[in-house]
Amino acid sequence: MNELTTEELLETLHGAGMRVSHDQLKYWRRNGLLPKPRRRGRGRGLGVEQLWDEACVENVRLILESSGGKRINLITAGHHLFTYNQPLGEPLLSRILLEIPSEMREQAQQRTKNTVADSELVELARFLTPQKVKDAIAHTDENTLIELYQRINQFETPLEGDIALISNCQQVFDVLVKTEFPDLTGRTSLSDDALYRRQRSFLAWAVLIRHYGDSLRRIASSALQRIVLNSMSYNADPPINWPKA
Image 1 (cartoon, helix red, strand yellow):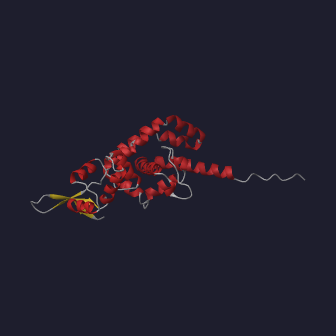
Image 2: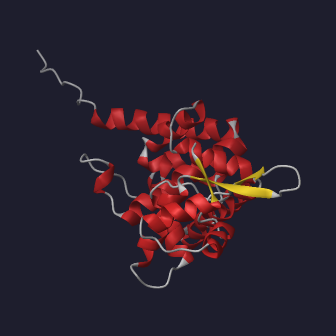
Image 3: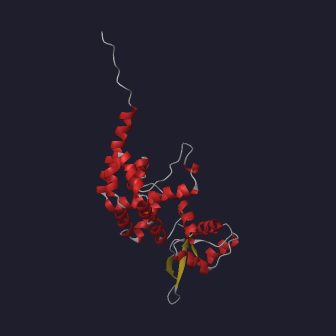
């Protein structure tokens, strides 16, 4: 990871035509739009300096882009950064995740209807109540949340294997809230809003798996297996009725 001092970051931004101030950087950082800078001592008696992740340059570009030339809206900017997997601060990641239990409550009637239609999902839906989802988010510390966010964007660890398996089954993945799935043309066929919702569900599943562990793995795996078996049974060729002699 390349790092820039505050002076170097501002110089880079200004050189690219992005006229922002140090106060703006601090304000965006406090609101989670920029990753937390690392502090480094300048030497004995010389105080400390902040070292910013080089990704902050792209973050600032996307923050400015999200405003469309108007006043910057922190919520809109945060959603824009999250959609494109940019490094963010923990406060913003928590706020984004907490949208899910709220939506689950709003969609309670539809969730019940969906699980009745897909009986394989009943146990999973009963386990993943809005309160349990909220509790998992609340009990995930800052460093863990940032780590999980980084890891779901890399898909390099065993944890992401669980998430990849779940995301391959739309019914299970959408037990939380409804998302759109890409068609055969791939990820780029989705709107920004759909990409945001999928990214949000990926992170939520990572948090839930980390928090509830084997209990959730067992229930999700059982639902996946039943859905696959039912699908195979439904698509199987009908039995051959041989003519009687």
